[in-house]
Length: 483
Image (cartoon, rainbow, N blue to C red; front, side):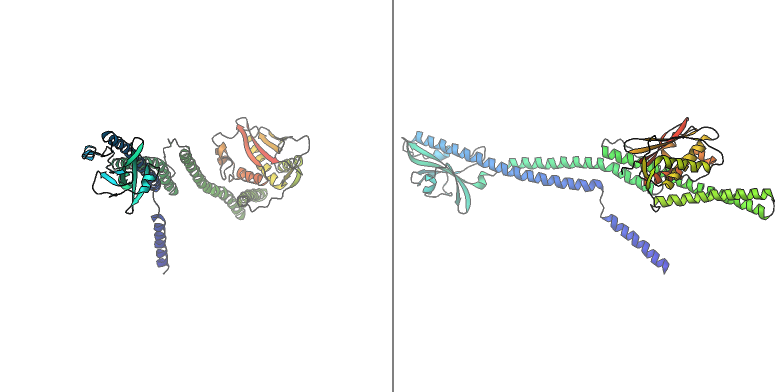
């Protein structure tokens, strides 16, 4: 039953994963479709506005042409016949089809509106023109005839400064605004712009999608534990370049952390196994009475020392985990920084088997800071232990206090061999141990990482100021007490 449920759950997870991915589309398809949709909407709007503009201009141009033709016809009638009677063949001689493809209904009417002659027997006006059209001062007028919209253009026939009739041209709005070639050209232009725009959008989207796709594929490899990736980064776009560069740096750091994790497991196992093995061997020797007397006491002392070392390592692990999860309370109070540093140095010197001299440079004037002296002593102890290991059997340790307007500066220096330059960027990483310490000094590589955590919880910071073959200097900064 359990196996069936587990199988069913696995299939359900796959099914759920499938549905999570089925609505996902590729970046290039997603943005290309949306860019193309936006482009088409814009081009359609441009096409509609352009079509309306073409219709408007075509209407105005043809109405103006009709006005010119009507005026020209009126002048010809006056010139050819003083009584304003056109010859029978007038309309056959003067066809009004022009290059603008118009052929309006043309009427010659008397001053009362009676139709005297027209170019076609049937039209919107049969026997008489409405007098209101003749009386209206507008040359171009809009008419509604048989529920259809027309435009009328008139020109007076004047003889001896007296209007004896009118030339009237009438045509529907549909015919006056009809164009074919212009719409075809507009359609070709709009379609061409859409195609070129789509091509440009596709190329640009593909250029953007490719590096992101490369990063996504590389991320899958990293998730599977393969950190050996190679993504070309020749992009000119700042954001894409920074994305790939940051991903590469993250991959390198993950690879280093994975290596450190493996090394940590081996290191912790070794560091804890060594004292356990030593203690076990010593106690077994005592049990079997291999050693007696003063030698037995010496074996017991060695066992106690090994136990203390193992206890220290376990405490370091517990302390680090507590600070990492912010579960350790920090009791900050106001203290004179000179006294806090002096007490920390004294406590460390007392715990040393051999006498080690420390040169201390205190502040001339007392300055108060808000600090937890116990936690501060942990930091100083770790820095002084590191300095002692760096010195070996010769050299000096210096502690100098300085101040500026807002903070106290404490430099802890030694004249040892220094930290190799390649190791300096990693010294504050948890469980990191340099090559020199890895084989000579036992520990878990948590000292500096824990010290930095503690000082940051006190509102300050710890940095490596400088390190060379002439020595190393760590700097602690704490904010002054403003109250």
